[in-house]
Length: 320
Image (cartoon, rainbow, N blue to C red):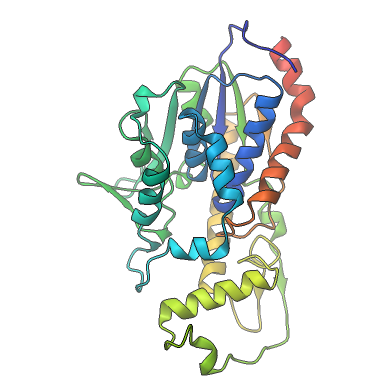
């Protein structure tokens, strides 16, 4: 253990975007706490905003307990059973769940400074949420295009902050951090892009689209496909990044996930080149699919492992 209570430098933690890979942030935080490293402020984008908000509000252990129990059908339950107009998930079910199980303080009342990043859908500008409802800040930041319906606040519409700043080091510096520890969930994703050829499989019979005796709607067929995919032990995107089966062509989720990974990987590299952190932690989670939030155990473990690799450098930095 190394105590840093006497340090004058303020340590900021930056939690990046990465969908289901984001539960690894919990492992990083737990590792820092076990080492006695005091985090003075936290900011995040997308899934990083969820975990960062939990840390700042003192609910990180509660979040850890909840995500470890998440099943695939819990995830399906957050989706809206209607043909999507601007996203599969309205978002209200998730926020209502958090409101029932967690508190929703104003950001300025938190014991630890917190901020999240979202993207203004109309102007395309980066927006920092540093005051007001914690849940609003999180909801705006997680609105991944195609998956979540954009978050509306007044006359403005917000989507995922990962579109403009996947690992918001610049925000953490603006908050006053002297030492910035950043967690990048998009490292090496494009290197896993492969194209595979598999034998054509039989088209499922019509009876396979029936769930619990009811004729399968479009939404039910979607959930059946997703559930079957996960039960077969594959991620929503084969080989983790977005391997496309050339015999059948890519599914809608493969297209969205692959496109998102390509975009965020490139933007992350550009932003980190201009705003480098002092320490960067890069969990190896390319095999985790876009919506596989039910794989928290392994993602949290990988977060802790990736932190352990960087501890020698972090110790040297803090001692200096």
